[in-house]
Image (tube, rainbow, N blue to C red; front, side, top):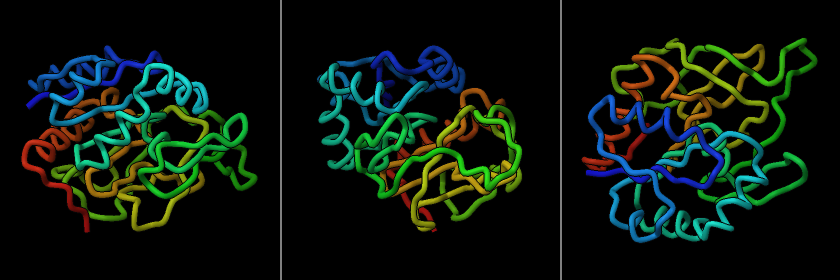
Length: 211
């Protein structure tokens, strides 16, 4: 089993690849449709601005590739900005359409008037909303690492975990074979590596169910 790590110039690819290699998972950094087709799962990392990421994916002729592969049932795992791209649209620097694979929008973190630092950078706990194989062996309250200024807003049925940063924020979302984490599992220590291993197991065994 091999994973395609999407290279579109907007992701911290080496840390993601090193994390997968550490857990013994074969992966390849690629922007090739043929190579993506040959892999069993896709990982979409991302740092930076939503609109720029969309433009880069389209310029690299990857936009329709990702949509088509996901719609055919191939596992697609978005990390940080990569997760945000899975939704319908973002308001960052004006409305920009996303991949529309999970219904919802991406907007500024709503601090509710609290004096919170934005971007949200640091370790915060997971609060599970639904049971997912992505979190097998991970305890409620586990700390993971976040770096973001925008967050997803979606129906509760799509949310597998929240985090509390003074305000409740979506930490991860899932819809069938489409998954995303707002946090960086590759930067979240042993627990993050376990989450990546769980994703690999989901891909290998075609186990995409959450309750």
